[in-house]
Length: 256
Ligand SMILES: [Mg+2]
Image 1 (cartoon, helix red, strand yellow):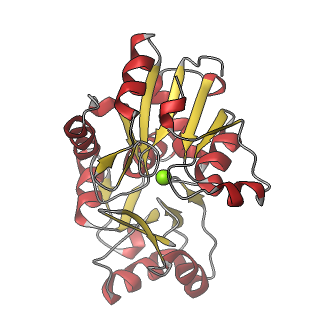
Image 2 (cartoon, rainbow, N blue to C red):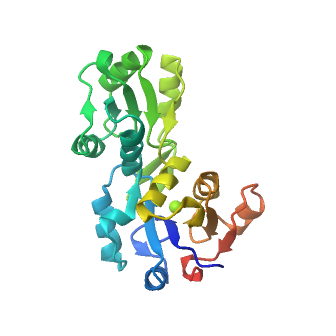
């Protein structure tokens, strides 16, 4: 494998699994850094901050700056700053996301009438009042954005499937279609990660354990891709899939 100036790493199933580092991960990261490669870690989980991810990686033995973490919250903040900096938001999400958006300087809408964008995220605090507010805003023409496809449910142990899906529910009730997705599998989050690296996206390698998210979005964003077999993808799944990564690695330890 050729050396890349920038590496974008999925976390769960790639760098660690649950609370344990994949064997060789720390050494691989150290080797990449020793040859001056830039690295960034991607997470789709909006319930933890970038600081929390950096702290977790450091605790597991991988020194990590906050600037080296791009999560779905950071991705949506960067997309909003770029394309809708003055938008008033209504957030269907948990307090950690709402606070991060407020800290980033965004105005939160007080009424459906003044809402420019309804932002959907994973939300264990969802209730009828949120649905009604968002539905009214959408019926009045607010855009519908989502940080994540909420078919997966982020937990301490990683993503677990089937927590239901707010996106089709809001699309059906409002007659609107999703205007923008910023987290995985959107290439937007890879673009934001490449910005963090300061490396052109075409010079980056996206490394992850899921074909239909990590590999597909890396390819759609315009970078080379590697799948690791330490997470969700098995050799059988690989053989049966149309999604072809540039590299297949037993683990992150085979990277460098
Ligand atoms: Mg993963």
